[in-house]
Length: 120
Image (cartoon, rainbow, N blue to C red; front, side):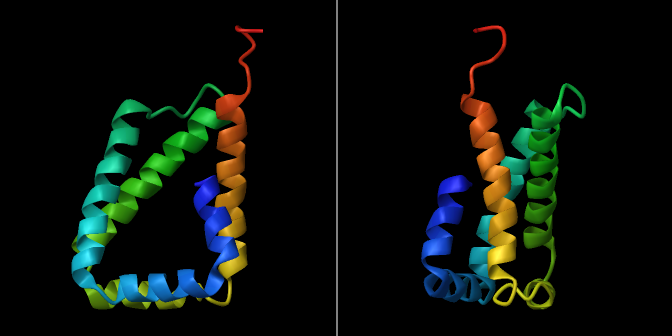
């Protein structure tokens, strides 16, 4: 997530062009939805924890969001998906959306690589 957000921040025009093309291709949306659904389902099944600190909760919430996003990409008609995308005003709020994902990615990366108290 962290590396993707850095690449997206460095290439705003290309990213916006790609995202617009993505939402204009219902087949690609469906295939992406299937894979997103599988990722979300895997996280929810393997890591459904709402206790034990902030990191497990953030990972669980990420899994549920991915699961829901995958379901919406698979089930919603392309016109509804396009309407939802347009309602987000992605181009206008581009860096705000990226900063949220960047912060989440940085937080998870830091906590994933910091030494645990047991290993110190």
